[in-house]
Length: 224
Length: 125
Picture 1 (tube, chains in turn brown, cyan):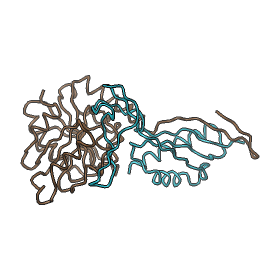
Picture 2 (cartoon, each protein chain N blue to C red):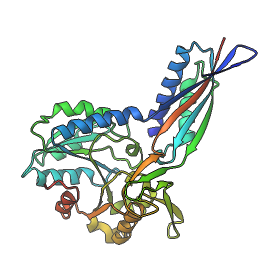
Picture 3 (cartoon, rainbow over the protein chains, first blue to last red):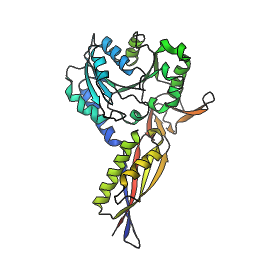
Picture 4 (cartoon, rainbow over the protein chains, first blue to last red):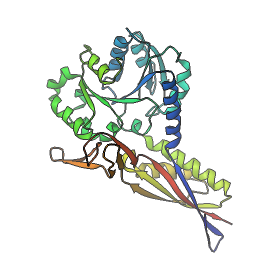
């Protein structure tokens, strides 16, 4: 602490060195430990509004649910629409409403985890709030992150949001059936993802038909 | 708008510390922002100043320090900045999340992912 005398009193410099993110990081570590203690594989699913996160999460839950105990957390600003859609696919679902918050944080997930029977659970799919910016700084404790981008968002979604890919291991390029209508080059989208993160696994999907979902599950290593 | 959460954390931290120190005013705050946080300093400043109104920090100057990303590579031991690809097709620069030296994805981001309140200057009677 440095003190300087001034005309009116004392001016003091205080070194705080306080991280503005480490509280979230610390809670994310607690979540990760809890999930690993129970042998649960968790995926944080990120993507824009309307990219198809819920449809893909539902498709994954349906396939995975045949052999494993799957649950989902559906993060949204309001309503239970997403949770209801995933529940129709047979998974146990808990909705987290953020009341306007633009991302899930580790504490929200920490509060939600005890509501599942963790002893019985194999896989937890965490659908984040639709947003390609804010969730980037808030890991929730999942071992993996997946980003969903879709052709209807246009050709520049990946290059315009490079930072969301920094912690992602898999990217699903969704709505491939609409690529021609949207005049979006799928190979270019894939090349953009690989430029930003050369070891990212890229999977083409169509959430409507289920095309590519098994490959997505394999890319996330959820089949073992 | 992840800036609001960060701004509120700054406001709470600074006012709590100032109260603990029995300060009469907060003069300035040094805030370090990592390149990979994607935080907008104009938005942070707006929300912090708005929430400092009618407090002893109302006139505090906000000094932002930008910190570049730094990575270390588990495979080859590289330590340094990220490489940036300039893509003429997009007229933009893209960060590459792989080792600039060996090209592998075995990197850990050691700088630039966080934001800090480094120092505050307060005045006491």
